[in-house]
Length: 109
View 1 (cartoon, rainbow, N blue to C red):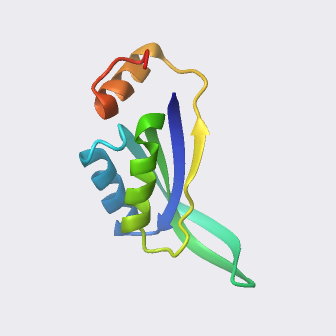
View 2 (tube, rainbow, N blue to C red):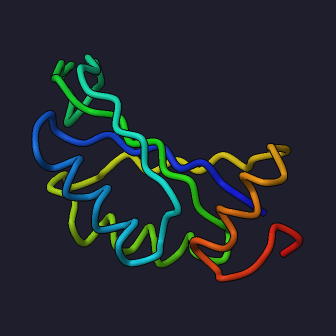
C-alpha cells in the first residue's frame, strides 16, 4: 500500500533538509516541496498565521513508522503536521519505481 504523507515545515531550508534526508535514507521515494504556503491555525489558544512549505512525501506503508519517527526527530515544531493518505491507484510504472526506491521491490507488495 502506497501513501502520500503531508507535512508542513517553516519556510526556508528546513523543508529542503527534511526532504533530502527522507529520500537519502530510503524512507521516501520522492518529496515535492511546495513553498509559499500561508497557514492559519489555532495553537495554545491563539490563532496563528505563518509562511510554510508543504512537503508531499511518497512512501510505502511498510516505511511509514520509520518515516514518521524521523520527521518527528528532525522537525523543529513541537507537534509537526504529519498526515498520511492512502493512494488507491497510480501509474503502474510509477508505483514500481516507488516500491523499488523505498523497498527494493515491485509494486505488487
